[in-house]
Length: 280
Ligand code: PDD
Image (cartoon, rainbow, N blue to C red; front, side, top):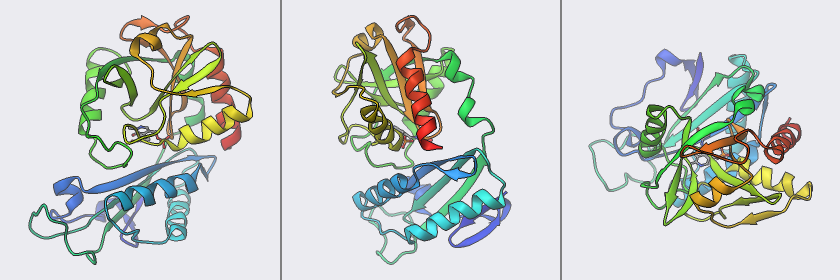
């Protein structure tokens, strides 16, 4: 596989980064994951807008122009023959020399990495017909989840806990309400309305979330942006998640309690169809 590292396209075995890189030592890096469907990038502009916001919140400069990032994404898709899959982008504050909590000088070059992978049949994932069974866990992440940093240890532990219990994923709960999933935004459907937590520092501002809510409004579906409890989710007609790699994915069980009929519901299925149709 050919990958991108700081302006060069190299075989992955040749792409190496310093042991002093702050992404490695401090988790001082941000990332984006963009979906490729039929060779086309989905919502690329949205991912760039969020990337610039994440960098700005961490006082990092955008190390290369958006047009260059787009060109690199396209080249990785092409050179690696990706039809359906993902492109990962990570920007760290770079090689800062000896470990120090203080940021290195602002002219320290960032480390920019991009690579892609194939996910054949991404759009007809059989999990969408089955639905996900999830557990809930306290949200022990830091309080700036709107910044897309590579500090993913707690979400990773949560996913491992879900797997250990024979389930698919976890939703996080804070002060009695659901924040979001390990790597996705969370929704319920009740009385034909979509209920989802409003954006704030509590959750990542999902690019799929923004697009889906826009499409749902266009389809005259009512959206209530407010926090909801686990109990409310268990009593809801339907539940689902969104993310770049999963699009709209039904949730059919929460902490062992079936949601609605315990099968993917009609509103969720319709939203998945609308999302895929609009993005292609
Ligand atoms: N995860 N919430 C969290 C905590 C996430 O990590 C993600 C994305 C989302 C959904 O955002 P979007 O719709 O822009 O993908 C919500 C990516 C896909 C990942 O870490 O792989």
